[in-house]
Length: 136
Image (cartoon, rainbow, N blue to C red; front, side, top):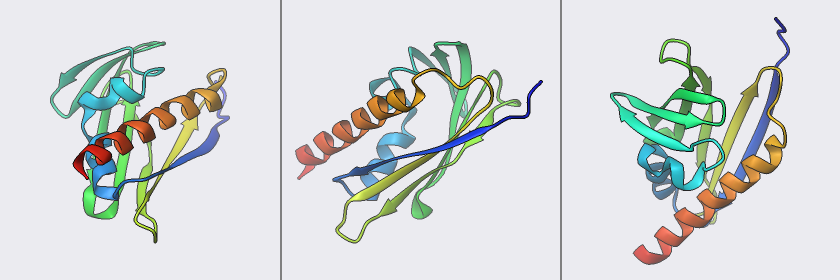
């Protein structure tokens, strides 16, 4: 077994308040709309969801603190074996939001992972901004 890890940070800037972005990501029922490469299906359970991913069914949950912009993702074959990926939402000086995801991969790293994250975070940005435009 290899102890090699790859840590990669991804981010987007969203033209919406941090609270709007937080609420959208924190609602696991929104996951299939934007994490479409990862989430092929979702079944809600107490404290999270079971997600049908390309590699099979995995537990997925979020531990969040809205006032701090913390949305830690937890994922793995079971709740007990789930690994954390820290994500943060930061209010920018102009009122937009910065969403940062720290991805932690073992071996092998999924092929085309950078493109997959770009697709999904781009979709998240569009969805949150569209929702914000309706509210404005």
